Length: 275
Image (cartoon, one colour):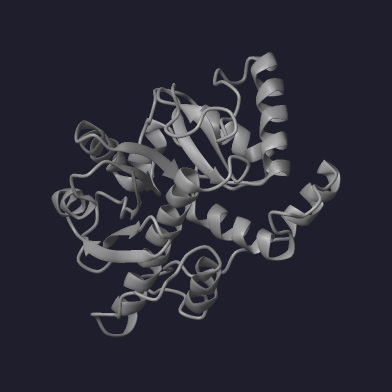
């Protein structure tokens, strides 16, 4: 399976000429093999290609008829991972609809495995791993949470139509910890438009790097929250995060707050998830 990430411009009410979506792929040798900037869903599907891929997208791929938030967002809140609460009404109000849902369905119909990812969480986990590499002794969960709360990924996303260009280089440097970015694309648009493309590329590559981690990394370095009905969110993880996820899922399920199963990691089921 190939490792592909998508940054999707979600707002269905705005013109997409300024902010563009991006599709990135990480080759099996953990090398960035390309980033394509896209406008329409058809362009995105063409950029993903036909050969089977694990495609992680930074937008809701499933929007069930729930009130408040989906089951994965309940768990993410208890993991101290900010996430936009997804409901049909909220998506309609903020974005004018759910662009990711039909796109995900179209990609799945072509044989791809599609799930969601949070690029900020990927960057935050990479920042964590600079101080706590994979061979570190696991922390007490209280110490882990305190240290996790102190981490802030670089701010680089657009505000008011402009990317925060002082955060672009630090975000890209974090991705270099995870994958070979020698083929990072040169900007094809000047000024703010080029910065917007750079921010989109960072999000797409973060998703692709996580997809590669799921396919080739150790089973305790990634986890999945949710299922096909509630929405499936993939996380870059460590043993402490997986333990916290399982603990909170068990508690929330016992309370009747959520109905999803235990967090899935590679040590449990491999990829793709069997449910």
